[in-house]
Length: 318
Ligand code: UDP
Image (cartoon, rainbow, N blue to C red):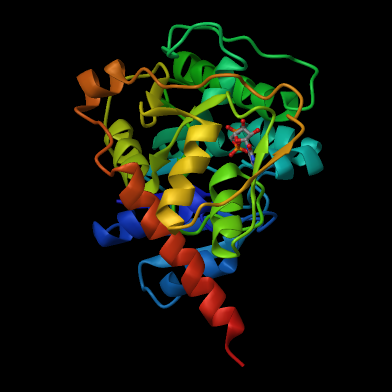
């Protein structure tokens, strides 16, 4: 099979490319590198089945750049960390809107399957807990985070429209907080932020009182979920995430334990519209995909910490 992956140099995108290539597939990866990193796919450059093109999928991708037909189109390109999407709100809206439309057009043209990575942010600051796919969400449509939330909600609506209008075989993954190697250390999300602070023995920056909750899924589990979903006939959104829910303060304590140090906590202001709680109900994924996360938080965090240590070792070399 021949796959087109947008966001191929990103955190999850690069792991998806690894998996597809390991399965013997052919992959063409696209990324504008606004947040993706060439390092994430450096190890794939020499692979005969892999090709990378730097381009912005918010603009229709010229056929001359990616000749030939595709069997599966994956649209992962998006700014994903609050720090980045707050700095680039228009690009964020564009990748979810025009980017989704352009990738869907390629799938329609080629009669290919299509999968989009949507987000738990579709639920906004949820009042239904845990979040189930049938919940419509509680999103501030004009707040600072709206560039991300609303672009993904639009992307879901456009994806459903392509299925209903053009019978494109679409899948929508609503992915919850995901972590692992190849996250950018400075992307501001809580996992790299705390691990970076732990590596340097610095206080952990907890925003607000730390009572807000999140549920963290390791990237290999996420990729397995995406692979399974891409084979399913389910057209409505499916939650993918790890149901283990922790307050951010509890999460900070886990990081302290992992680092083997009693790290201090530095309280900082809570960003606006920061969801108070988030936990996926994965009954649907369990039932229709036979999927659930396997990697324990401690194991996944250790892998991620080792990755960040290895980066630090490389940059410290003369
Ligand atoms: N957070 C924190 N300290 C940090 C970074 C984030 O306490 O240095 C909090 C943030 O306010 C949110 C949670 O951790 O409640 C997860 O934030 P992240 O940016 O990783 O993802 P989000 O789920 O908000 O998209």
